[in-house]
Image (cartoon, rainbow, N blue to C red; front, side, top):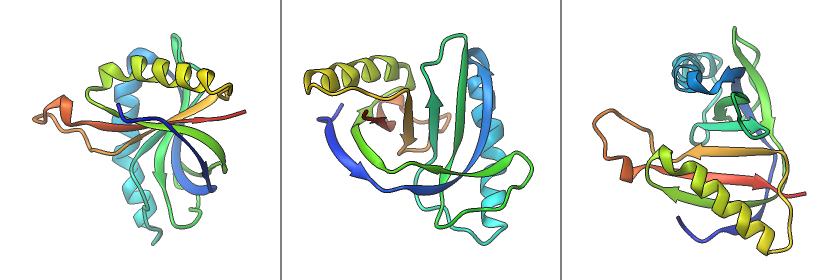
Length: 152
């Protein structure tokens, strides 16, 4: 894990698929969403401007409320399950987790502890940006995930 930082981020238009998903079905939800997103976005002549992300609305328990998608150069028009949205502007704590997705829970816990040690409070939403695209034959240690926690 890299050293956390506090930064101000601008609002960014996005194209997303939203869901309320049992946590055991998250992988298939991601696979399904990422199979339709690129075609819906590029089919409108809109450019994808960054890595895939997931925006969670509250901590997942048995069910996760989230949206997954891509940042775009401008808003899209809804196309089936793919809808326009935006990542909000604001002050955030951010860090990059190196390694398997299995380590994300601990990485989030450490980021939350770091934020508290700064005398700050995280919001209810948080997001993961998948800086490396996973593949079946890759070493999970090569994965990089940026964790972003909006601050209140």
